[in-house]
Amino acid sequence: MKSRTLILNGLVSLAGASPLQPRQLLDFDLLDSAPKPSVHTISIGEQPHTVHYDLPAATQAAVADPLPVEAITKRGLAARTDDSCTSLAAGAGPVPNPDTADAFLAYDAFSTAAKTAAVPSGYFRTFENLQASNNAYGYSGYSTLESYDTAECARRCDNVNSCSGFNIYFERDPSIVPAASCPDPLSTTVIKCVYWGGHISADNANNYGQWREQFHVVIAGSNGYMKNGPVTIPGWSGEALGDASINAPLNCLGQDTYMGAKIFTTSFFDVGLCAAACTSQNEYNLAHPPSVGSPKICNFFVTYLSEVNGSPEGQYCAMYTQYWDSSYATNDGQWRGSDHYTNNYVFSYKNASYVDNTICPGSNSTLPRRFL
Image (tube, rainbow, N blue to C red):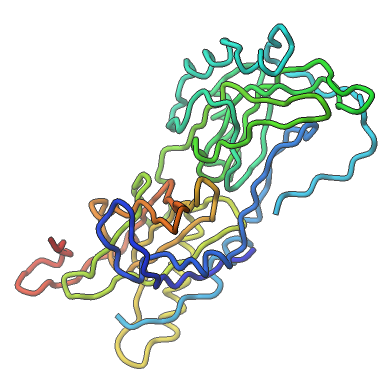
């Protein structure tokens, strides 16, 4: 797996926040050149499964290509034989009468189930009762349910290592594989529980179904849920920042505490990747000190899922020498022409052993002071 280092030196203005220090702006040239994340759409006939990621390889990629030292594709499906008009697994949901796509989309029982579904413990709802499923980052598999049961779907998500959230919905599927000799078969209603290792929202719920011959696959009662955070990492203290990342000014000594960033695009969202990158960066910096002064040490990082117009760009990992609290979380994204880059599912982590020894001029305090 690969990671790309981002040296952020663009000059694009930030939407809805005070100006960023120039180095904290996105370098769009490097973003464009990074490998694009795989976005998976579940095909008809694809059996329930979970996706297993090679986390050691992802971690190795995260620590590769250290930043300069400063002084202070879709998963391929197996080949199929001719299965025209053969039976597909029956779903557990009701089939509306008449058996048409329009009737399915208008069926009140589906929207009622979505609107009255309980939010599982440890999760928050990101969208409700849509007629589309997600195309997001970190596809981690799916299973089928016997009922529209958000608690059961959450339980299954909890048992998948890469699952950060899930999408539950009713799907109108064919009862047999559509073909020229059976172009519009009877339907069956499958209740799907889809696991995601990335951020799911209404913005990336853009899979409205598909046509198979003359059969129309459609979706109803689609709800999305994400886990509450932050994830516990030994040696680090985490904080959930919502949808805004840190916009750090120079500290009270006029120093730039920002070190640089990496983006990971071939795994699932895992805050541990950023922690590993931060630790590895320190090892590299100490082994390759600058000719003058002491090397910068990563004591604090912010990681989140970067999206453009609702499509995933990857997991972003920004590193700092100094801790900045949530009052500095004002970076809610950038515009690039008509393209909107957003920060989603943002978490910050401070090294548990970090002590701020910064002594501000004219003060006995060692805490960073905010400039007005």
